[in-house]
Length: 378
Image (cartoon, rainbow, N blue to C red; front, top):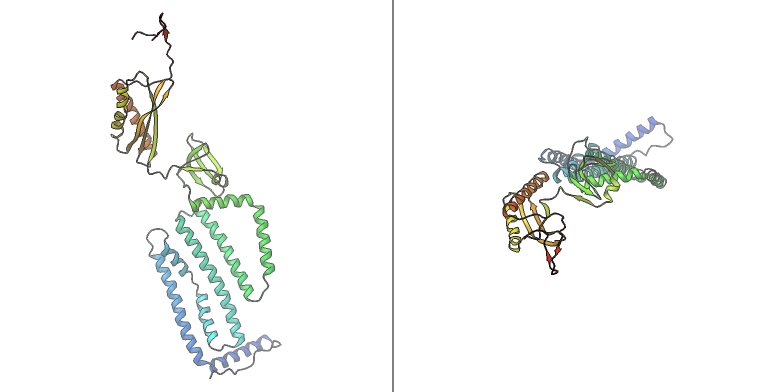
């Protein structure tokens, strides 16, 4: 039978020395009267503490064993490695207190410390999990880059939010009325959000660009009538270098509201060339044009002819469309290949006697009998 007898709890009217002496006597009586329960609970608590320490060590090994970037093993390792010694000790103490008939005063003290340790540990685990998942998605970059700055801001916001929730939970578990505190924090957050609405709008737009990655630094993009290469993604604005060499600066919020064309994700590039031939070109020669063009395009390693043929009767030309694809993401290489194909087509047409058309007007003269004659001898 467990011995519940012991000295009475300290009288609130006692001074500090008397209270300390009474608590010591009560603890001594508790230990001597419940030695078996305490030893059993302590043994279980030691096993749990060793298990938590082992999990923390396993987390450090997962982090140390990573080879490339942040993966799921690294995220789990970061969470486990952040298990604090204070939490481990309080878990063990709480287990002993719950199963060894601990005096009420000592039990309340242990429970008070355990609530603090558990709330703070939960906040730490949640922070590492959230940040780990974010970095797993976006990867790692230099701390001085825009991504590094954004991750720093996310870490600050997540830390403040989680630890604020942890503190509120601690106060609530200790019997403090937190209704007014929560209401005050809510009103304060709304006021700050309204005052800095524009700043936060661009900030979260920057985070959306970095996390969702519709484009990256170095990508060639186009929106509205602006085209250029992304030079920098800032926390408020994005800077592009236009095709004319000018720097274009646009706020992140406005940029995300536009339809963006990203040319950097293409596996191949598509080009359409339109050319016109004179109406005097014989039909049999027109039939040879697609074959001539196909032979020229297929001479180039990255080029592939999609189609070539007549598409329209224009006022001064027979119009042809040449559609081809370049199996390369290098725009400069594709541009140079297209230029060489154009020159070779020009040389091949000249050799075959095929004339390109250009905007002209031809006047016809009527003969005495009313028939039309050309203005030059046939």
